[in-house]
Length: 542
Image 1 (cartoon, rainbow, N blue to C red):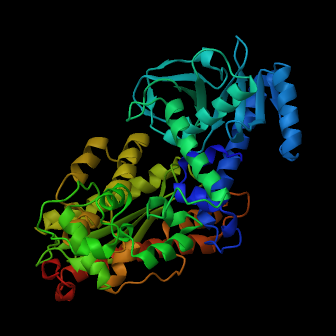
Image 2 (image 1 turned 120 degrees about the vertical axis):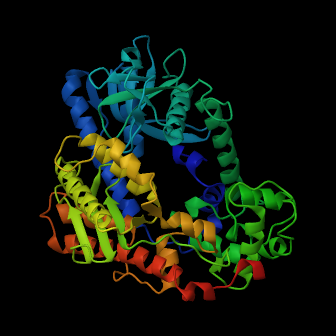
Image 3 (image 1 turned 180 degrees about the horizontal axis):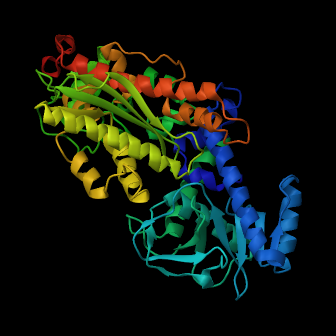
């Protein structure tokens, strides 16, 4: 049995299901279009980086054809490594039957002392502003060209280091690993430098090195897969975790979890494991505990009392329960609901607002501030500047008339990130505020995060996302496919990112989706301020 690098980042139960011969014909969830698009984007990014490196490295560059069979790709890779090719792109390394490994890597870089180090190309950020990362320019993509970078620090991306560790073990098994400390490089989304990782440094929170963490995870997943293939007693049982949202095996696991009324249906991850460890393996057993008693085991996801009450609500079919007798939502004379749309880490292309409340010489309703130039683009600064200018104008006029003002969003992390980032990246452009001005606003009482209010004042059996909570207030999105993941695909079509003509209907779709998002927050907080919300069950009565 041979496993690829991806298993170390997958749920143990998924590894079991993927290798259980009895599950071969079991229906799985349909492929997530947004996930497929992300993979296509990553492939296009890798190709663009490869072409750039090939131009710079010239005759030193060698590439393994991708359209060949696995056996042929492995044969070509071996020939290039044996010949000492300086840079080998798209190599498929010899399988390691003893270790149970297989796989390749984007780039193999020959060390001056012989042997190769792995380098991967990823479509996410690998560094943050700071200092101390070891980087080399793209013109020198080898560890010997690395220096301590005064402008960058390493952004934690465990999956990258684990992939590099997998490639390193394959190189070692085939006899082509560079001597000395195990090292691997990453070229990220910005593709401006190579970031180098010392895979033998104890950089993990548990004190392990990337290699030792990889070894422990891979050995575990290999044992799980072998037990599944042998149809032995499973080494991994289903348990709901974050990964379940996009896993093709979720229908199978969900059915099993509901049949057993597993405790992970109301608590997740570590908390479910901790509760099972003391014999509380079902929702029913958790609901029987005294919520006012001392927690029998430490929980990290939520207070023990909340977990018990949530279990009782789940058993009664209650999706939403009040934690407080009276719901408190800060309101104002003039109110603006804000929702931002971004495209991955490339930028924020749309700021949508819904103005309501007292008359401040502005027509109430929806406004959108957008750029339809493909991100990244300087035009993003223009649209953000126009949004900030409009929002500031509303605040100023409200204050001049002696009216109170508040702006609302749902989960401020995204909006805060892009307001601060835009202020920094587009400093000096018309209407763009300073970083200090943005910080003053988001830390003021005028900026209200409804997600935090929902978290503090409700127990939510099926999650706290806006798409889950707003329907309780009577709101429904017009588009049946409305969602952040699908909006990524719509955006590509709206701006013609894939070489096709920009599609105006997809622009309208995005604007309508954004308008519904801000209307959802308006509807939700209006409902929370009404007597209707107080008709929900009260946790104290459970």
